[in-house]
Length: 330
Image (tube, rainbow, N blue to C red; front, side, top):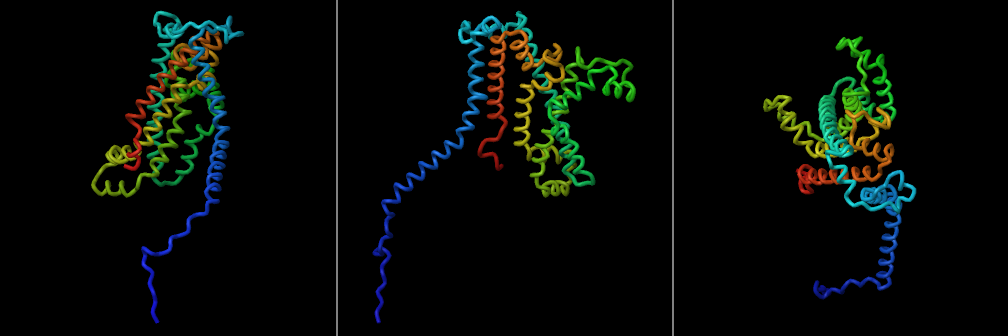
């Protein structure tokens, strides 16, 4: 009995897909595309209504003379070009000197608050990576300021700082005996100290949470090998911990820096609508010019300058510090 083998090159070709399947596949792809557009449509509309349109209107306000006289018909307000920006950047004018002073004050506030918050968060995160009894309780306590709404926590701080016989002065004068005077903490030079302290209390738990999450991804075998080689804890921190969480650190500094530079909630709740001059940041200054002095043009110009400055700093920071796509897995 003889069998005939079929050569591979002479094998029967596989049947081509039916022509009726091609239109059906194209119809399904169009339906999927329409569904995707419908799903993102609410987010796009909300982004336009909440961010894009107000930002465009704010930029337009910066180029017109909008005050309480022209507010009723603000679309008919006269166009004055760069006059609002010139006033805001002129150190000899009242608005310009106040704006430039608030820029320097805000920069110092950001550096000081961010630096202290990072140090506290890093120390707590490194300490709580080791196992000991009560570690879970400490982690929970450290996150309490982050869980409390900013308004509630700031109101509590304002109550403790506002009175000469308040909790803060009782601790400083009666318990610790650091001074015999009972200072006012919400006016004068002490107002800036109060603003920094409350901001650190509010911000450092977020930094602690991010750094603690980053430290959980550092392999313990690296520390064990370094210990066998005789490396001290301090050397392990500088040569292992910081390099291995540099990406999380870079993102954390950028996020906290933007939050602090735009800080408005804490000064507003702590001091009221008008902050003391020694603690006047950029965002409260913009609010005061716009809604207390009714000079919306100057407020819009300051907002636009703040937006440009933050964009430029963020772009340079992202290009120089944050990891590129190919460095994420280094």
